[in-house]
Image 1 (cartoon, rainbow, N blue to C red):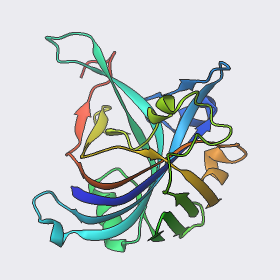
Image 2 (image 1 turned 90 degrees about the vertical axis):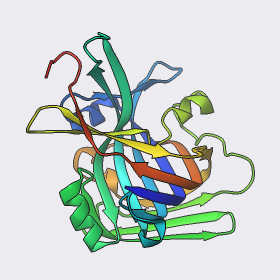
Image 3 (image 1 turned 90 degrees about the horizontal axis):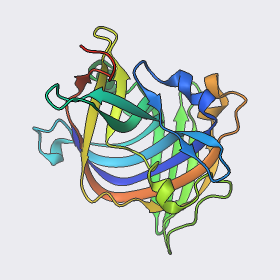
Length: 254
């Protein structure tokens, strides 16, 4: 699949690791960060993307769809076996999908069948006026509503108050989306890895006003206190997804 990201806004929230670990599929490890005070944190991302030209790679851009989409992900790692002649393991950083939303009923249906991105139908909108970028989402069950505004002008914004990151450089390690997404394959027991391809990826820290975010009020997040750890914006990026590949986690031979 290929697309052009007009605007991508990603909010990363910090949680105690014990909140997020149960959400990972077999073979995955939580990607964590230890703050200067010694506290360990795990992270979940909320991504809102305005895109155009969404299409299979073999089609020209003008045949693609224009969409606003959102996604909820957990930062994770996968240690996989290298080619047997090399020995050892290598670690991939990426995201485990929790929920995805699109305004297209057809895309939600096709996406559910052809991918593991858990697409659902929602009413989504994006508006950019000068240096202000707004996203609004109304989910069918009310459990993934979102209203957020980002200030894009001026110098890059400082880290949000209360962020566990010591520096912007630390925060950039958890600025989604990451190059891989992961999902457990129940038939083989392996992990399905989908690798992204992208151009001119230079996320910029921005100040945001999160007026409504209901996803972290329900299910395993009920009663938690998510902390906004960073917010990054990127614009004008060509993006795509390779076909998924099954990988055997380290420690178990396929």
